[in-house]
Length: 244
Image 1: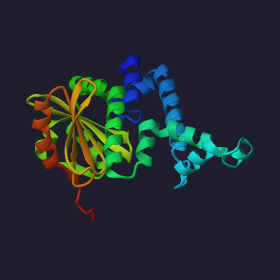
Image 2: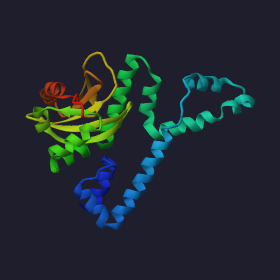
Image 3: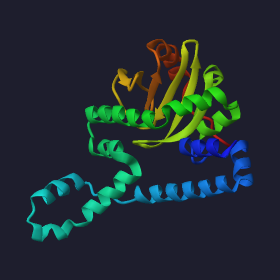
Image 4: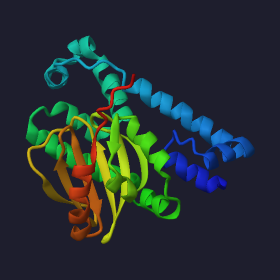
């Protein structure tokens, strides 16, 4: 893995610890420096999202707009806190937090999906095509959310990594179908009533409700979505095994 590939992987998955990634980290001082900068930035983001949010934040912000300038000092902390929230989780995630009803959730899911795809959708497809993961690697990623895939789905998963979602940590997968590759993003605790077709930039998209959470599918054509939807819904589920 050269320096450019290392930097690209840091953008896609800053917590990657594959053998190639570790080798580049140990043998290339530039890679070591880039990883240190990335770790510092991720720590900063984690600190930002830990800012406590009052339940009446929106009401406070609205009132501030109409308060006399002499009284604004009483809630002067609001802009700084809002800036921290936006830096940590992004505008679409903040909108998600402020919309409690199902329609708001659906709209925010669509916004989050578009933002997520524009950032690293294509590059993750390229990585899956050029360097597919082994089964053990996929299982380790799924296990971070206590998920397992059945044999049929596991054979089709080319790549999996953790990613941020409006409800915390999720899983970004690339699934192979007879009609092409499909991006499948598992968003935990995001509830929608029914499946919904949508456009994700130049791609077709589909939001699919699961027993818990939602799967967002993105593909170059509708046939790929149809090919993968049933396999993913049937094959991805929580790990019910109790360790003794």
